[in-house]
Amino acid sequence: VRLSRNSTSSRSSDMSTAALALAACVALSAMAVLILGPTERCAHTALGRAYEGVHSGQWLVSALALPLGRARANALARRCQDALCDAPNPFGQAVYVLLVLGGHKSFIDGVQSVHLHSLAWARATSGTFTLALATWIVVCCTDPGVITRENNDVYLAAYEYDDVVYHRKECRTLGVAAPARSKFCTTTKRRVARFDHFCVWVNNTVGANNTRWFLLFLAAQTWLVTYVTGACAYAVWRDLRDRDAWNIVFE
Image 1 (cartoon, helix red, strand yellow):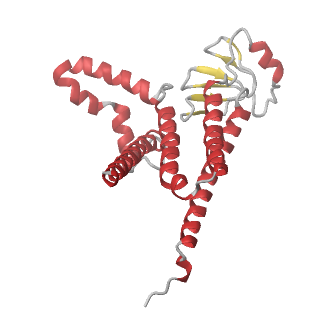
Image 2: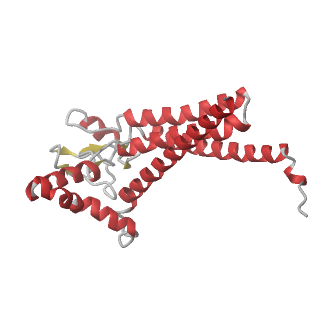
């Protein structure tokens, strides 16, 4: 009976790991289509064609034309296109959480619980994954430096025009002078001080107020990947050592 229970538990764990791996593959494929599909290099590849299909919405129109009618299907396709491709949405955040939590479960079940039993490894693993998630949450929630009519004077005084790269101009959206080094984010429809880019993984713009947090987020993710890679390599080496695999002789 005990053997049967252990076998059932093992199969359940394997199935959940396989489901997480499949979900991660699907999510990563979707992110590759949305991020790489619009680029010139991928324009004539499968990624480019998939992005064009998603962006045009014709697949959705064709699927819904019969039950809803052509006009309603077109309107729904445009709304889906705006929400998925041209506006902030939590899809990238969901993919990140799936990868981190799925990776944590896979690492615990497949590596740490089998080969790395000490309390020190448990604490190191918890700290590494917690740091990665904590920095991600901070970047998600931090104001990137959104410029409004009320705080525009503050940013005008903070950054000077050099009349070489940064010229005086008016923000057509706000109707005020645009501070140097600011840019209008076409995704969030906001002007951001010291604009860098819009990051789909945090669903937020990176600008003057959260650049340091974003760099810390990148460092935490780099450490997470390095830690997991090193721990897996150490676990493999330790398993080979315990099995005395280095002295195996094939005849």
